[in-house]
Length: 277
Image 1 (cartoon, rainbow, N blue to C red):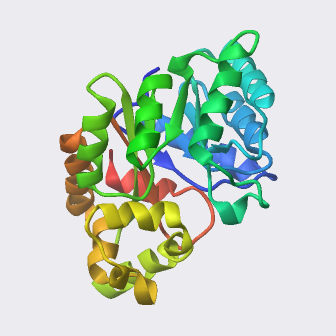
Image 2 (image 1 turned 135 degrees about the vertical axis):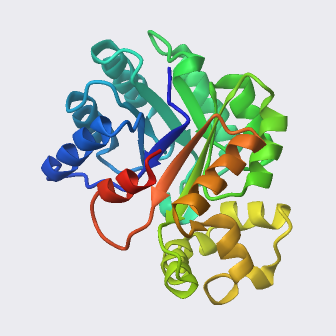
């Protein structure tokens, strides 16, 4: 499966997909090779519509929550999509966060291992090459290395990309998400970036990873320090964004999926056109 060097990560509506499908078709024409989108109750319906509405784009879930969708459901969707659209669907799985799982969140690493066991036991099984894990910490990265095509790392830094590549080894996929603000004004750019980071500052999966990367508790206060914001969110002109993308590639990312922050609803077709990636 060829994701390309750069793709687009975006929140998508679960219903009224007409405008989204028009935008995705335009993004495909502009050369966008992969569209990533996050968990929702309708994730597989959205993936089905995106695949049917395009001819070349790879559709990747970033993520399917293992607490919200059973292994049987994921396996059935995977085989449907790969039958109808060969080589164009990547099943990205993740453990999500305790506050999003209605009290189900227990032993997430072990639960992920059990989920993969069930995908292996499905008839037919979901192949290793067709699935990837959202992974930040060393143990989840090791699980991604040993039992999937690789890892999808969300909201992190080039230093983490380097660490993840060391753990994954040379042959596993590393797809790094990167939030982007196309604005050279520091105050405007950081304001939009902090708006984006607000919910993640409450999520231990992320804050624990940032602590491992050398940030401190003080960096999480008041919407995030400038140091934290600037490390996690690429902002500036086209050259600055391209430079940050290059840093992730140089650190070992195979694919960088850009989450372009505009403060508006809808897929960011014009910013993607401006970036020319």
